[in-house]
Length: 174
Image (cartoon, rainbow, N blue to C red; front, side):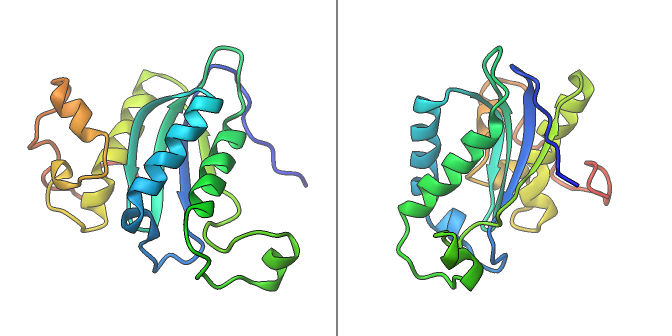
């Protein structure tokens, strides 16, 4: 059976992309390279970043595509490959990846979810912003430097104390 992705042009998508080796911290160690990769891809394939968080081993992104454009997969692939090309080749690469001329940095696939409505959108923005707290990196979402929550705080959408404690399942992760 072939996996089928959503393909609604102009829609908003929640994306999760993980490193192949989840114990590594490449994304935060090289966050400037990741920012540059995103900038380059946005210049070639425009999209809006509604919310984003970069953790050591994975990232969450809420992206809105231009009207009539549903190709989020090309954008995510381009971000991953552009980031990977900026790093030295020190990762362990399996034979199957060598045959396909792939690096061993990212998991091959990524998770996507097309946002259905305003409630779904708000739930995913919250999930993105609370993720560093959920993983125990910080006590308050505003303490994590690699998050769009700082834009939300600056725009008055949430305050810096938002979600300073998290109960299991409170943000849809159970």
